[in-house]
View (tube, rainbow, N blue to C red):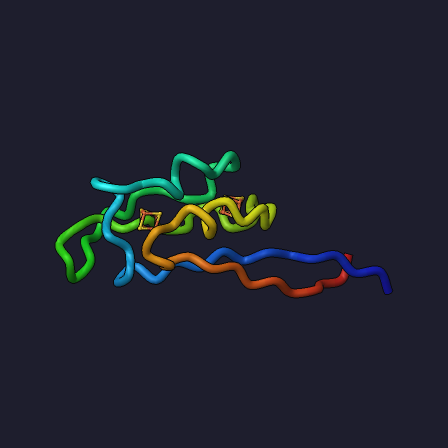
Length: 80
Ligand code: SF4
Ligand code: SF4
């Protein structure tokens, strides 16, 4: 059976310094996968959150740009 890779981007909101003062991941994502969360984290800021996970291409730009290492990618092979 043919398979293709599906990427799942993950964010730990507790590690995010906040989209107010950073937001780099939102700016670099060309697929609008990420947005500012309504809820605040323990730091009292609005972290980034994943909203359109199916649009993620796995390009890795958000992971590379996050200064707080709050974002990572998980990949799984699924049936095409
Ligand atoms: S890996 Fe690429 S497409 Fe996926 S959320 Fe990050 S920047 Fe967007
Ligand atoms: S790049 Fe990292 S620290 Fe900056 S808003 Fe996105 S998740 Fe938060």
